[in-house]
Amino acid sequence: MSSLFAQAPAGLWALIAPVRGRIGVAISLAIGSATTTVLALAGIATLIQRLLLADASLADVGVRGLAVAIALAISVFCRAWAFRLSHLAAFDLEALLRTELTQHLAQVPLGFAITTGSGAIKKVVQDDVKALHAFVADTTPLIGLALTTPILALVILLVADWQMTVASLAILPVGLICLSLATQDQAQRRQQYDEANEQINATVIEFVQGMQVVRLFDDGTSSFARYRSTLDTFTQTLKDWTAATEKPGRAGELMFGPLPVLLVVAVIGSYGVRQGDLTLPTLLLFLLLAPQINSAFKPILTLSLFINQSQASALRICKLLAEPILPLPSQPQRPKDASLQLQQVSFAYGDRLALDQISLDCSPGSVTALVGPSGAGKSTLARLIPRFWDVTEGAIRIGGVDIREMTEAELMSWVAFVFQETFLVHDTIRANICLGATDASEAQVVAAAQAAQAHDFILALPQGYDTVAGERGTSLSGGQRQRITLARALLQNRPIVILDEATAFADPENGVLIHRAISTLTRNKTVIIIAHRLTTIQSADQIVVLDQGQIVEQGQHPQLLAQQGLYAQLWSHHQRAQNWQLSAKVPHG
Ligand SMILES: Nc1ncnc2c1ncn2[C@@H]1O[C@H](COP(=O)(O)OP(=O)(O)OP(=O)(O)O)[C@@H](O)[C@H]1O
Image 1 (cartoon, rainbow, N blue to C red):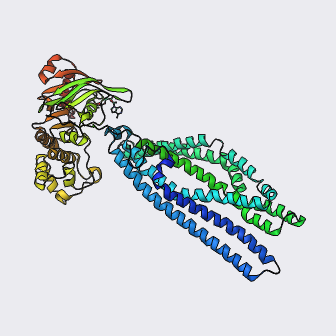
Image 2 (spheres, rainbow, N blue to C red; image 1 turned 90 degrees about the vertical axis):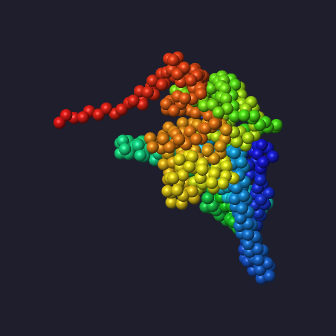
Image 3 (cartoon, rainbow, N blue to C red; image 1 turned 180 degrees about the vertical axis):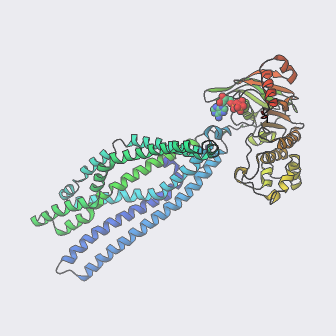
C-alpha cells in the first residue's frame, strides 16, 4: 500500500485528495469571485435605475457605485487568489505524486520495467502527472466560476421576472441541438484521430531511430514516403472531422454567444417595457445577466472535456500505483553459503510459459553455463535469481534459503548481475563504479578499475575518475562501458555472479581485456553465465542446455559433445561460424 494514500486511489478525485483542502478553498474563492461579479452586475442595473431618476440623491448613487466597485475588487482579488492557491497546490501534488510513483516503482519487481517498457512508465510519471498538475492548477477554480455564474444569474432573473427569464433562454435548446449534432459521433472520430496520431508517432520514431540504417540503404526516400502517407491519412481524418462538425459547431457556438440572447432580450424586453409589463431596470438586469447564463455553456463543456482527459491520466497513475510490490518476508533469513539451487522452477510471462520445471544445483565456486537457441529461456532464468520476477512455481534457493525469504538488501549482497545492456547513470565514472558500494575507498575503486582493465582509459579521460559519463554513457565506447560495469561488479564483490553475455559485443582488443576482467570477477565465485561464444565456456563445471523452457541436456563439454544432441549441433554451428571467412575472388590480371 502506498504511503500517501490510506488506500489505493481509484480515480481523479482520490488522487488529488492530498491537496483537497487547498482545492476546496480555491473553489470557494472562485465561487466568491463569480458571486461578487454577478452581484456587481445586478448592482450596476440598480445604479442605472437610480441615475435615471430625476430626484436621484448623490449620496445614494455614490454608495451604490462604491458597493459595485468593492464587489468588483473582491471578485478580482478572489479570482487571483483562487488561481494562486490552485497553482501552489498543483506544484505540491506534482511533487507528491512523482515521489509516490518513484517510491512505488522502487518496490515493484524489477521485471516490471522490462515487461511494461520504460517509455510507458515515463509517460505516466512525466506526462500524466503533468496533466494532473494542469487539472488542479487551471480547472478546479474554473469549476467554481463556470457553475456559480449561470446558477446565480438564473436565480436572480427568475426572482425578477420568471416569464421574461423563460423567454430569454428559449434560445438555449436550439444551441443544444446544434451542439449534439456536432458531437454525435465524437467518440468514434476521436478514436480515428488517436489511431492516426499514433501511426504518425510510430512512423516518426521509426524514421528517426532507423535514420542511420535508412540513409545508408535507401537515402530515406521510402521511409519518408511512409511518413508522408501516414501524415496524409492524419490530415484527411482531421479534415473529415472538421467538415462534419463545422456547421453545427459554429451554429452552436453562435447560440451560446452573448449576441443572440441580447437580441431576444432587447426585442422582447423593449416590447414589455412599452406595454408596461416590464420596468426599465428589470430590462437592464436582463441585458446584463442573461448573456452570463448562455455564455457559461462553453466553459462547462470545455471543463467536462478537461475532466475526462484528466480522468484518463489519473486512471493510468492509479494503475501504476496498484501494481503489486515484491512481497517481502516477515522473518528474513540469511543464506549459509553461495550455493544456488533451482527446484522445479516454472515461470510464465502472463499465460506464456517461458520456463518449465527447471531443477539445477550449483555448488559454491562452480561455473554453470546456460546455452540454447534464441528464446530458450536463458535470460529469463538468469533474471529470476535477482528476483526480476518471482517464480510461478517451485523455488530458487541461495545457501539453502528461498530467495523470497531474504530481504532485498540481503539478496543483493549475494548476487551481482552484469547485464547484456550496460547501464551507466549520468554521474562521474567514480560514482558509476561505486554504485551499490558507496562506502568504498578511493584505493578500492582504483583497484576494481585496474582489475576490470579500465583504469588506463579512465585516466586518459579529460577529468579522469571525475569525468561525467554522457547520457546512457554515449561518450564512451561499448567496450569501455562494459569494463566500467565490470569494475562495479568487482567492487561489489558479491559471492554469486550472473553474467548475461557481457562480452558479446566487444571487439577483439576489448574482448581480451574484458575476458581478463571477467576471469578476475568470477574467481572463487558461484557463476551463472549465458554465453553464445561457446569457446569461453568449454571448461565450465556444468553446461545446461535449454530448449523451449526446458533443460534438454546437462553435463560437461566433452560429455555433451559425445551425446551428439542439441549441444553438439550448437557447437558445430559455432565452429563453422568461427572458421567462416570472407572469400574474395582475386581478379586475374
Ligand atoms: N518481457 C517478456 N514478456 C513476454 N515474453 C517474454 C519476455 N521476455 C522474454 N519472453 C519470452 O520468453 C521466452 C524466453 O525468452 P528469453 O529472453 O529468456 O530467451 P533467451 O534464451 O535468453 O533468448 P536470447 O538468446 O535470444 O536472448 C521467449 O519465448 C520470449 O519471447
